[in-house]
Amino acid sequence: MNYLMLAQQTVELGWSFYLPLILFVLFVAIGVPVWASIGVAAISMLIMSGDLPLSLVGESLFDGIDHFALTAVPLFILTGDVLVRTGLSKKFLDVAEALTCWTRGGFGSATVLVCGMFSAISGSDAAGAAAVGRMTISRLVESGYPRPYACALVAAGACTGILIPPSIAYIIIGLVLGISASTLFQAAVIPGVLILVSILATNTVMNRLNNWENSDRLTGREWAANVGKSIKNGWYAFIVPIIIFTGIFSGSLTPTEAGAIAVVVTIILGFILGTLKLSDFPSMLISSAKVNGVIIPIIAFSLPLAQALAIMGVPQGFVYAVTSMTESPEMIIFLMICILVVAGCVMETTPNIVILAPLLHPLAMEIGMNEIQFCVMMITTLGVGFITPPLGLNLFVVAGLTGESILKISYRAIPFVLFMLGVTLLIAYVPELSTSLLPDIYK
Image 1 (spheres, rainbow, N blue to C red):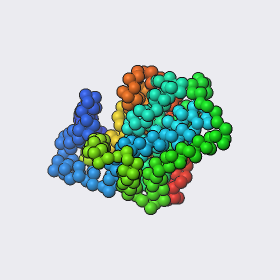
Image 2: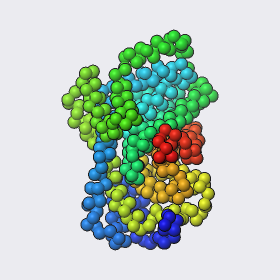
Image 3: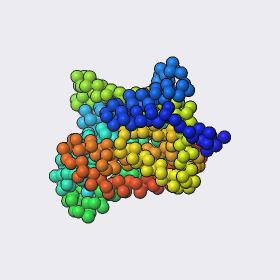
Image 4: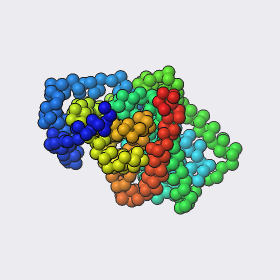
């Protein structure tokens, strides 16, 4: 029995679904933590429907986080925190600036590259926007960029944090849908690079149109000497991303093992350089625990919610509702993109994944979409939502960091959104962009 036939039997939903949904929206709107809002919705559904004994909720909560792959999440978060405290993130910026200084808008391009690298390692685009923004926004303004545009540039660059492997978002969606995180990392390489290139291209075009950054032009020999000097002074900072990327993509390390080794190596480098002391550990661990404490409870409560939705036939009913409006796969994919962009505007990645992935995944399967491609499309589209005006999360992060008007930043972010949406549509309609690096079994 396919999803459409099953949906026809379960499409009728009563107050046991709608009332918990209303409670969830209301609680999120008034500022209740997302994990608590999800928990209230899940428990309300179970009580009202009577389909699953409440005695199983505790077991479900434990099962939701009892996964080895989830250990990678706090490890990558801690790695990002240590990179900032040891000053290694500054070395990334120096090398990136040396590599791009020959182009128009070179420092802007360097900022985007560092945003992507730091956010990917730390697993949080908001953290990437804040950390890199502190280092670069003032220098971007000194280079000739308007402050609102500099903020939008950092916000856009940080979006790549969940798109370029290793990414916590792919670990979570792999856990929710039962797909290997390493497979998703491989699939995300080309789409992630395309998004990064689209942001770099946008900055180059905007710079050429407005003549903002007047970088000194270097000869080929001067550029090579500058790059060599930067790499010589900061080569050790790249030990961490090299371990992560080569370990995961060669198959010799799982994401969890790569994260563990990265933390240890980063701490050792901090001690060797003298930029990390034992007294830094309490605040460093507390900071990372706070970020992790936002993610893990959401994942824990997602399992009873998913069970409640599945028992009530909500995913199948959603498939039936959408396919009743249109049977065109192209139009259905476009509708999914619209839903995900809006969701990415108003909520963080983790709750969006645990709530929407179980709903949209059956719909993608019904229209014959490759499930790996679906995961990449979903994460990419949510990333676009982070800078979609006027509610994009990263826009608020850089606005809070600089005190700049959110409306001015939103206006400057529009070109980035348009370019990124263009790449998102390519990813959604061209499966090869997500599957070309994978074994034939996944194609």
